[in-house]
Image (cartoon, rainbow over all chains, first blue to last red; front, side):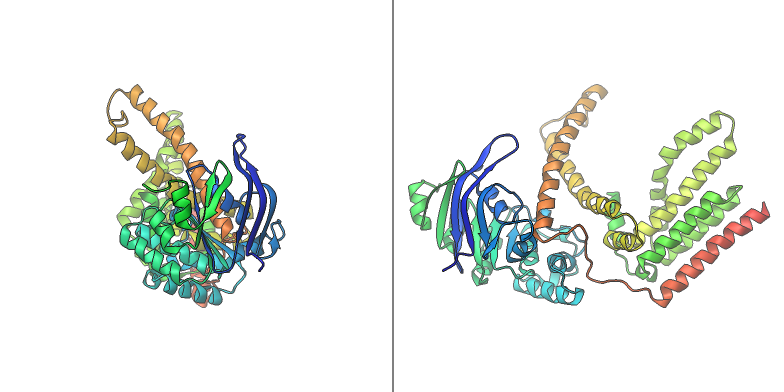
Length: 229
Length: 242
């Protein structure tokens, strides 16, 4: 089976000389949900930024059988949707509907089709009633849902969620788990939240000092790296 | 916060709000040119131009007092030059400067308070404004919210820890404020990077594509005709009456 994401020997050094990724090999298959665990600064977010072409290091990355290159970037970004840790960074248009339609419009869809997709994504995330509201008036949980809707409206094949439970209260986190379970896309979850990862992920990968130090089932990885309170 | 008030006002639902942003920009440009070229610019000219804008303020159902007050934000800048003119003995020039800048600010404020920023930028882009300028304005608009939000959080955090921002000697307060500013700059840079990444990840190509592509309607043309004839007529009358 061809993996949706195939990353080989990915290396990345920040401008200040810090080696953030040191030969990461990673694969993601259809319908899989993988949790990326590990300490702060271990390279998890740097790695997922490579998958959307927002950072460029050494190594080979293929997304949905497309080689990571400048030419393929628009196609890759249409297939891999990223929800950032701070949802506020993702929301910037005056209304929720316009914001969710931002991605589909960038795909070249007509305003009518973009609106249809945006409405559908808002319905999927239970935010259809907020369509006319200003994004900065929403609660943290609602902002997260709208940010997710903004990505879903682009109909990606892969979802990447960076620390999706930050700022969420337990009911909002529970709602997010329920929502993510219903979504058919393959998912990568960058998280420190083990109950959340346990509720969703089929396997876990542990990052340490820019390398993958181990992988396996969530319980295995948590036990091996003593990754629970 | 001023920009939040403007943002709220700009989302109003009056017939003035619903006018195409392009005709509002065109009308504003005519108005500004008329103000700049009307000689002599006396009280009567100031009052006539101000009335013209205020009729727009009423049509847009915007708060009159709030608009007059916010337009005065431009005065501290021009007052400096007006004071220099007045000290040099040219009080007429001082008045002209203040009156022209205030009347112009009122016009610009009416446009900003009756048009959403994305619609304004979209209109500017379709009127052929340089793309780089429109892009810079787009980001400025986006980052304005981020920077002020960040500044407020940092201020609260500093005050909670007994910072000298609110008390102490002037020098101490200045030092505390400049320290906060330096950190704010660094944090804003990081935030801006995050926003840029989030936009790129959703396929941002340098332009914001709106959901509705506005088309000029007969009422837009009628408004432009009315605004142009009122502005140019006023300028003509003021010039011949002098």
